[in-house]
Image 1: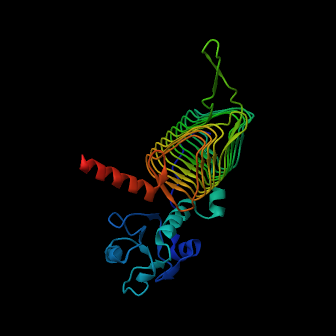
Image 2 (image 1 turned 90 degrees about the horizontal axis):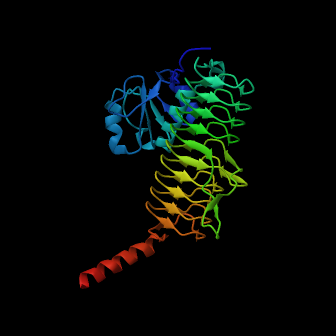
Length: 346
């Protein structure tokens, strides 16, 4: 089949459907339909907006938006504009955006897949219903692509790769052979997944380096998002695993054998050496660097440009660490204050 892949279009939805989908309380005409989300300043009658703070409510109500998601503070407001009341307006807004984009399961299942005429797909590859493949993309032998997954222009999907359902693979992504991605995984442009780790053995006699085998796997679980130009190495002998719901920013490097827990957040330009464990719910700021075999405990927050030495273990759910080598924020600030006092004495 020829033809270009068209972007997913938002589907107009009545507010009563959105309210049910995101668990919000509807005030006003539930028959009003919106088809997209927007900021307060740029909204049109077809858009949905949100406010988290009461001080912005008036601006939202006076905007052109078709409806507003807001907190309980808006429930008593006098206006003709429909309201969706939520304990967490920003979260409800995000879920509404996804609902508008994806539609109901029935409608999603009816969408037609498109394979661009210039795509190269091996005869042994298996493509599920509704799969879209962009121009010049290559899908190698024995690859399995789940239902409604979209593969952008110029992507390279290696032999034996498994992609789950409803994935979004943006242009020029490379996924090496044998990698596995779960359902609803988003991979942004230029990412490289499953490449060889940086592993070598030095010959003491000659001083030369021999490549250590890089024959493990990369497994990425459901609902993970991976930023543009991020690289994730496969395991050397075992697995590199990114667990459910992890969100990885642009320009991040994850070395071989790393284990990234559920709902972990990793900001841009962070670099992880091999065999690092990041436990569930940890947050890593931008430009963090972590040495091999280190462990970042559950719920730890590591501030931007923080550095963790090899084999180090950071523990403390909800505790913020900062600096290089990383230490609890309070301790780090005390040290800065002491240095400042010493500098004044000079």
